[in-house]
Amino acid sequence: MSIISRGAAAAALAICVALYGQAHAQTSAPAQQRKPAAAQPAAPAAPAAPSNRVELIATQPEWTKVCGKDEAANKEICYTTRDFGQAADQAPVLAVAIYDVKGDEQRIVRLLLPVGLMLRPGFRFSVDKGAAIEGNYEICFPNGCFAEARVKGATLDSMKKGSLLNVNVKNQVNNEVIFVVPLAGFGKAFDGAAIDPKVLEEQQKQLQADLQKRAEEERKRLEGEIAVPGGAPAAAPR
Image (cartoon, rainbow, N blue to C red; front, side, top):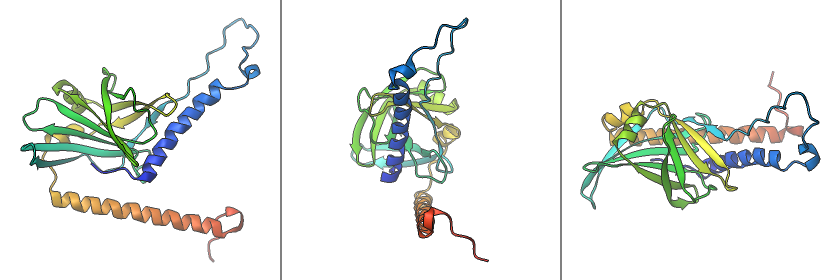
């Protein structure tokens, strides 16, 4: 599974902070602003709750299945993975990988989540409107935290047939955030053949080149805005 960059983790943390800001603004307004209006014939509608759902899209063309042998355990291990973000041309916010260890009844759902989240009581995930399954954080690095849950065949089958994976976490002020991940194509990839290691290497090189190209384009765009007084775009040459 690919590792989320520091920039991606910062972007994901900004999402959580923004969601907190919406809730905080609603609950910390001055008392006179929150004072109920005078009695009316009909009760006023309750204010809409701030949205805590973050809809993600795939930042990779498709799910990728990778297989190899764990020499220490002497077992064949495959994992099917994909990265997700808020836009296809932006760095990923979250990564999903489902591990299948040959001979083991259980599978492992492993997530790479952004930093800045509450590590307790862990996370929950569900497929579409199914029952929630609990998982725990395992280890954190400066650019993200690994979290995982062990599941059985029924959960795996629901993921193969389902449409959305809902990942529930708590942000730094204990407000719930739900990352919504599309599952289209997962079942086909999980049951299909593993990718050729050489092809995988080429894909990773291409992805890195694309990210570097976009970063360079963004740098030039920002330099062009700074060069013009007031930050206005420079006029096109005639």
